[in-house]
Length: 144
Image (cartoon, rainbow, N blue to C red):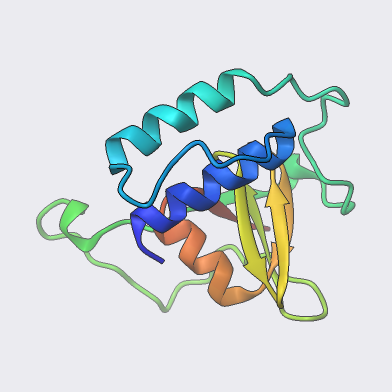
């Protein structure tokens, strides 16, 4: 998923949440313009009324660790990445879907169904979709 496609999907999700049926962008809208549209739409979203920031899946967010991806080039010189250590385990359901937390409101396609995740909320999505969202920096994985 390209950055432009991810931003357009994000805008689509925000529009759906706000009840806007017409897309506020065109195919030739630039990434900078898409980012500005997102900022404008996010200011129109009302605050979370239940205050818990979860989607009711039963996972207590206070016990979870957020996991993101880092480019190898962002690591300090001489840093070593070890995979032989026991680390946190990403939360998954019986279908193998991973639990992600949206940094921004996003709309994803998981198992053939559209999934809208408001900013700060969590949802289970198939692994490849979760990893794409994390790589695009619109979501984080949750781990125990």
